[in-house]
Length: 383
View 1 (cartoon, one colour):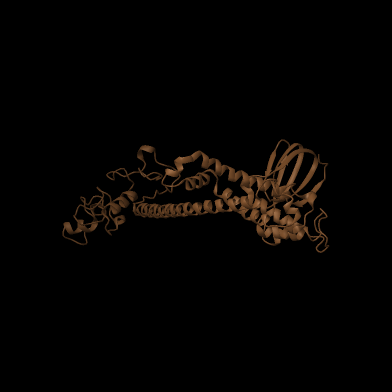
View 2: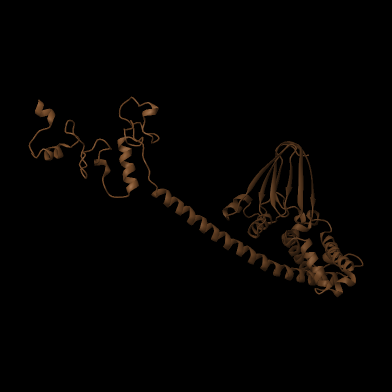
């Protein structure tokens, strides 16, 4: 139960344990800091310099420092999570966090260890030792628990050896190699690396003469033998992983190379399509200057054009018909100066409009046809 306004300062749960947290009613606000090497160092210095409200420190330097300010000043991030009624939160191992209660709340929660964060749990165990955290704030019998974790892992190896029996001896691969392959197939890489870190830590504990460490040696267990066997087994497993990792990296590299090649081809095809579209003739519609628009059956067939279609112009207005002629021919002739069919001079090669009452000629050709350069058109001569 938590009263409104209560606050728990920044801390890491003992032994690097993970946490499950369920709000039955009320509300909780969490502030999280990722447990990077840099952030954990800042946290340990902050917590042991008397700046934490937990009262663990002995010095009083930087008494007014706020941990998020130190983290953000060093380039880190602080995350806020609001947990409301009926919601459940899982906090990963080692995450630095503080909790604020804005209203009266009832919550249920618990701490647990697991094989997926062995490396982080051992890191926090060493950090607590360095910070001289009191016994009451530590995970009870943590070292003894780790010895049994190692023993259980070796027992699984022995069980696999028993299952293979004489079949493994006659195989090309060998029984031990088959066991290693099965273990590597059963556990994810990060779990095996965690066991490898545990083996290194156990080897250090087995050589220790400190009473605080030797008191947690399990009875009737040869701790030196367990530490050595676990170290040898995990060395072989990690070596096996290294081979597989190389193959995976080569496969990933090949996939990336093929993907890059495919992307280049697609980009080239796309650019080619764009260039082809740019080369396509584009007929731009023109707007009629008058307020009235021709009926649908008399409009130019170019969409958006509001000009009348002209006779003998294939359904186009005169402007678009000229554009069509220019685009289809591909030459440099200025078709804007050539009249549409039926309106041009009947002399071949002449690109002038025929004049009315000039027998189908333009004015110049009509004068030439009557063999005089000064003879006016018929209409004017009649006048």
